[in-house]
Image (cartoon, rainbow, N blue to C red; front, side):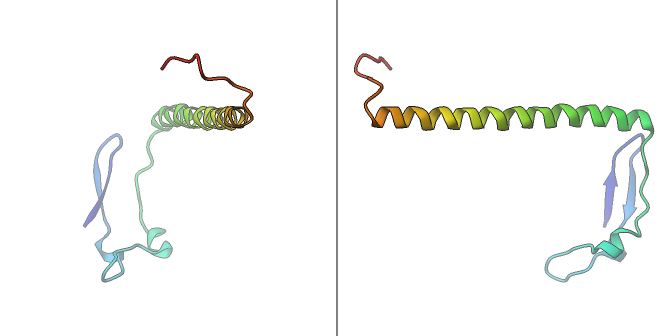
Length: 92
């Protein structure tokens, strides 16, 4: 078994000698720390960071929007239950 790492060039890291577990294969922390892996150039790291920034920004925005929609839903349900909103003339 090998772990494929893609970057500037593709390389295979041999890991079969550090895999433990008979039924569920795993790599413990000590074995993981023995792996040597390629570190991409700074330019690739910066591009990757920009990609992650966009992804995390979208996640934050989605969480905020979800919270706003949840609050709106709760407010509308409460107003509907109290009869403060009339839906008789609403067309769907």
